[in-house]
Image 1 (cartoon, rainbow, N blue to C red):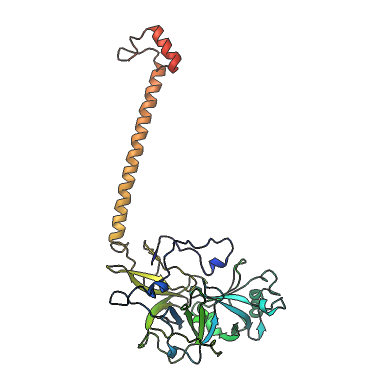
Image 2 (image 1 turned 90 degrees about the horizontal axis):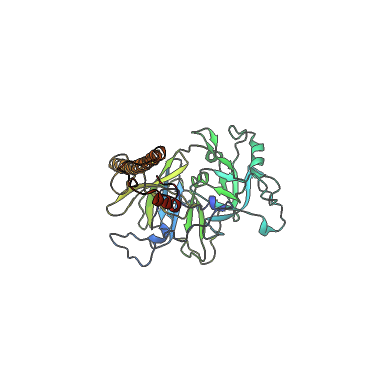
Length: 402
């Protein structure tokens, strides 16, 4: 279930909420989490299957981790807050309020409480907190980003160092100054959303302090999102009897509460943990292998995308946390040499064919010019013995003879 890419995959998450975006192709493969939980495939030495279609994600300032099959209760301090996703295609929760310090940034215009919310995507592929820069066609009394900017005076040097308080489905989660201000690059990680974007993006600034559970066990009827405060005593990728944890790696950017679960709901416990590289508190990368024999790739872990995509061509400017091989070696070595030789041979053949046609056309034009300059033909001409009457008859049929 792999989508091989020589270009970025179709839009989803952030870009899918922008108008004018096409729907993903119906021919896309099964999402990776669904393939790993396919009940028709047996769990054996060659197929490590998951019993539950769920995973959790958490990060620190320097590390990150995927927990497959659910979540590790030891990673959470207190209870897990459970809320439904309002769509089944993206992990979108309901943002009822966003305060900076004590100042409300989301002042809704409608009186109807059912309309007083913004969709918020839980997106690990986004570095910052992204909030609207307009009134959302009158839904808000004033643009939240501009109001925040007026409070801090400058995004590059904020005079106020307050926390954000994000209300998701009735539970309030703090995003502290140390999380939204990136000290290593001396810049704030609060961004204005594109004009046509219809909501909030909750990115890396949130995942660094909270474990987020993505539960698809009852898909497509429902998708559940769980949020729990990270335990200060938890060690990432620690051994757990029923889960596997995958590490991730983080790359520096180029730019820049408790609630009861619903009745009869029981959060799944993870069976696998995957460590992730956290590059300077921004983007997450995971090393994987695909195929037999195994071929190594580095992929971005992004909860805002439903496609598992790998590039069939190495990109030398990409982070080299893993090797990028496909069909016989790293592109910088054997793969690149073979490609250069093939392209060179193809270019030689094309040039040869073009030159041949140019030569034939040139010779034909030269012959035509010679016939126009010499009225009669010599004995070598096929028309030397043709009588004037016959020649005139052929002239009327074929036009001017060479």
